Image 1 (cartoon, helix red, strand yellow):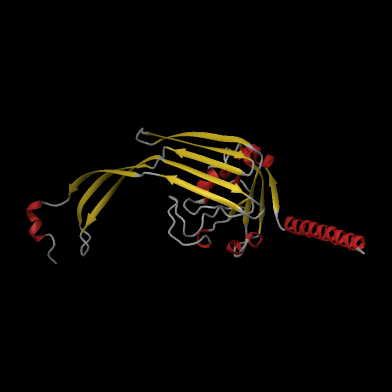
Image 2 (cartoon, helix red, strand yellow; image 1 turned 90 degrees about the vertical axis):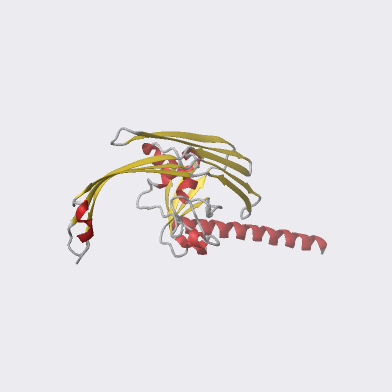
Length: 270
């Protein structure tokens, strides 16, 4: 009796295991039928440096940062649903809402991307259910170190050359991953133009202004993200970012009056 019971229990356990494996395989097949996959070698022709470069080259896909996010990464909203864009990483939404998707993706070296999967949003939970397209960026889980450094220079029409340097490194060991990134965040822009100041009732020209504006943003930053996966659906994330910002504005105006100052008393009479 005991032996028969043990054999029956073992048979039921084996059947449960087979049934679970079959269900997972069926689910994976159904999911694959609803997605379009692009392997990493598809993007080699574009010489990508980061995951962002890959995402921007996916055919028929346009990156959405999320309705409440700004280019500076300032987010003032509770929860993740309001900030969800249209990209997930390894099937899950990015763990931080303190930075935009483009910033997160720019910190991931392109060598870490195995493939990307483009499919409907309902595949990735309720936060994405209303989106027609969501891109899943699948990263390698192998231990190792990958990094990149990018230096850029932009010359403006007045001869000024704006320089900027940014870099990131991803260190993966077992179930943990540490991502570090930094940038000088220098961006100087210049504007030149003219303004005409007129009297509203008559349209008479009051003065002509030749203006020159110079904007200099200094946004250096250091960022770190640590991830520990303890199971298929369980993970721990810690995020930190330090970013002191300054903004300089220089403005020069050359004003040419179009009236005689002695007639100032009668200028605004109607």
